[in-house]
Image 1 (cartoon, rainbow, N blue to C red):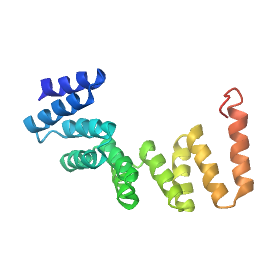
Image 2 (cartoon, rainbow, N blue to C red):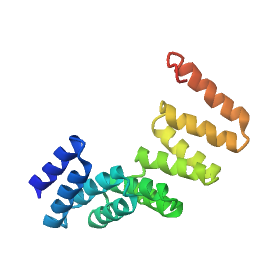
Image 3 (cartoon, rainbow, N blue to C red):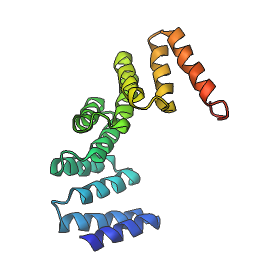
Length: 173
């Protein structure tokens, strides 16, 4: 399976995604109990636009390795792109059950909650990120968005002013 996996990665890096997926499928068939191979297949399927099958591959990776953070997170993203927001929320929460400090899942869960109108929940997720990493500008910006949605405009302005003060050399600020 290692050689098949390697061939899938070479084909992917060469821009030959259908071939890469074929190699990745062969690797999974050769070692069906290997969660990393299912994950790689999921990434390639996701990249090809086959989100339904990507979800199946990510799900199998998490079944085989329940503490596979990246697989839970990617499953959440894929489910979210399919409009299955409650399932996506569960996937992010599953990653956070393994590692409550996993900032990527926190950020994705916060963004999902924001998109679902759960602005208080979103604000709580972004605050969890900022408690561990106060300099996290994307989380700070999302925090401001949640505050705006909650009509807590003075707080949002304060957060945005802090961002402006710390990122004055960044033209995107």
